[in-house]
Length: 153
Image (cartoon, rainbow, N blue to C red; front, side, top):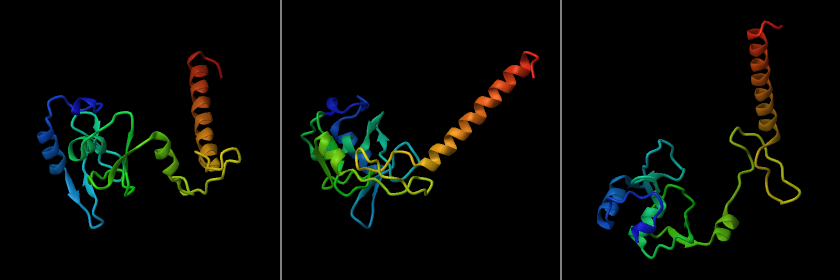
């Protein structure tokens, strides 16, 4: 069953992977079992035991009956939770349907609703405008540097 988990190191057995995941995790007050993967960020999906996603590896060894055609979803909403009672396998369409979007971008700007889909725009206009301004400045600097290297002004 572990061979179906994409990116998992082949040196792990079910028992060693179970011990490895439990060693790298701690329980929170809300009942979640939070895993500490390779990255320092909290609240995002974590990779462990090679390049496997922790929640998928945990489902395979702690719950069992892993089907690679389905997605593993956390019912609690915490992306780094590996609590077996919080993990469930659902279809890709169900995963997308239950995904929520925040009303603000990561820089705190309000997002606009897209008329075509009824969902929030992926990038807010203020962040997009700022990114385009930075790109234009980089391009202008490269052109100026190229002109200076050829002796043009």
